Amino acid sequence: MSIFVTVEDQEGEPRIDAFELEGIFRHFPKEGGCCLRFINEVDDASFNPAQGTELLRELEALKAAIAASGKELKPPVRSEFDRLLGVCGKHAGKKNTYIRFYGEPKSGAES
Image 1: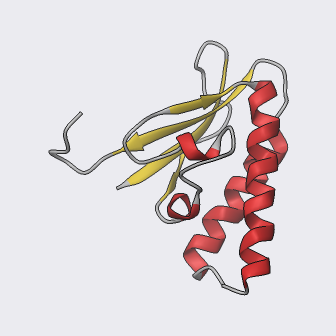
Image 2: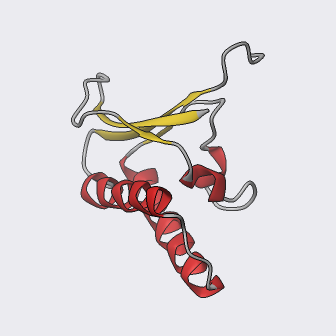
């Protein structure tokens, strides 16, 4: 199971090549917050420019919480988290720009 991330304009045209998250989303909180709790491997989630800035804040707070816990992310998970932070940092809040997450459940999973 994984999640694909892309940045699109208001017509759905990609602004970046989609990339895959395979591990970091397992660290996203399931409750609280406005954004991260809606990103999972089953559903799609889309964040408009105003929501994108909140998404970035939640990602930065997660980064700080992981650092404060003394736990280290495995290198592949750290790499995808850094990439996600970079993409969100570059595109969050930009006019007519949407950060989208496409869940990809296991084959045969119920809808």
